[in-house]
Amino acid sequence: MAVVVRRIPEFRREPRVGAFRAWLRTITINCFRDAWKSRRRVKPAADSRVAEFLQQLADPASGLTRVWDEEHDRHVTQRLLQIIRGEFTEKTWLAFQRFALADESAETVAADLGMTVNAVFIAKSRVLTALRREGAGLLDEN
Image (tube, rainbow, N blue to C red; front, side):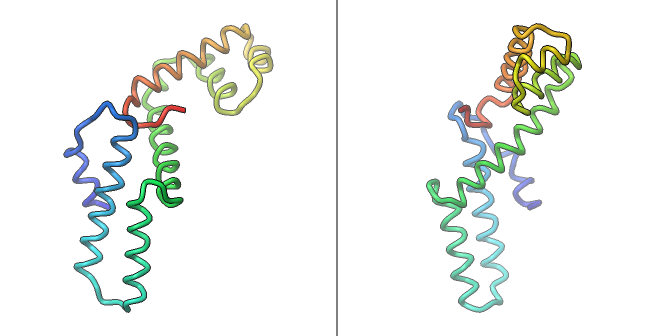
């Protein structure tokens, strides 16, 4: 893992969505493959399992890659939310969390926080705008 982390400064940001995630996956595969080759002291069956694992991870359409992408986006989103948290009041942040993340109704959130329903929608919009700004190119936007 340390080898992968040391290579992060090599990444050059691209406008293509998911570029960092794809780059990180490729670097991880290559580092793992190099480490595996330098330490081969196991049975051939293990070699084929590792080769199959790396092949699945390299295939952008595989289930393993889909899991990789989901975990990456979840981790990056949580980190980005931590980064932007200080830009918002407590009430705005709570409205966003409850409405956008906890899937509570805007009406319920508004009533509980003493806000209008429109203010809840605005809170969500403001936080999502900051999240998109901070995470441009790092996450797929759905």
